[in-house]
Image 1 (tube, rainbow, N blue to C red):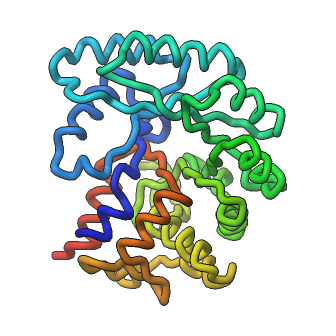
Image 2 (cartoon, rainbow, N blue to C red; image 1 turned 180 degrees about the horizontal axis):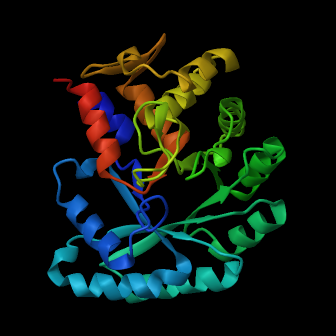
Image 3 (tube, rainbow, N blue to C red; image 1 turned 90 degrees about the vertical axis):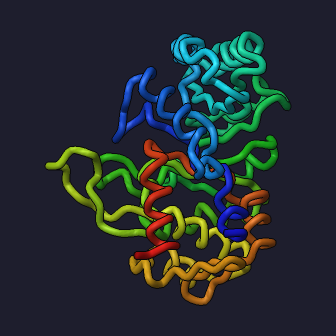
Length: 294
């Protein structure tokens, strides 16, 4: 569908190395190679890998041989040694040119000083996403990201209920990004299409909790970009009913917020870059079930 491709093309950054999936590097690399060959690979974004594990990733990439195909795009996670990690990334890009390339950096850059160090190290060679804690005073941090030419990142969940931010904090974060003109990505707890009660890990005995839906987050961002109020946006973010989402060839709607293809492209270009998920198949299959019900 035209509007879905405008909204969701390349949106899922595969983070299978991280909980709750937490697969090892050989499995994660094989998974990503398999996802690239699927009909729904148009939704697949970058492979997310810690900068310190790029050597391990490279070993597994070489083992794929001809299965690599066209150049893979990666997002590298920065640790505390920002300069050292960026140097590792640059060395990797030189060695694997044509096979894989890091074009995005992410890190817990929770102070203006940390953002400055990342901006200086990255220069203009990478998109940099500064993870900002949702319980912080986010406005000055996002304003700092804008001054430094960085993007923002919000953590929207995890494997325990206490790490999920309250919905109003997510709304506040998105509004600050939109007002500052800062694009953002979201990560963790977003492998479901619609908000609801889900197991917090893949353990059959895992507790359940209320998780955000990636469609809720995207439409909430669209609502704020369209000038809607916090109350309207919060209602979208908290919508649990899959039947509230209506998708046609040309529009996607929830409540009274509608995105057409033009607005969907603008949202992806200027506001929400991607979301990280430890699963690629779950978001795709849930979206398919929502759009093509039996």
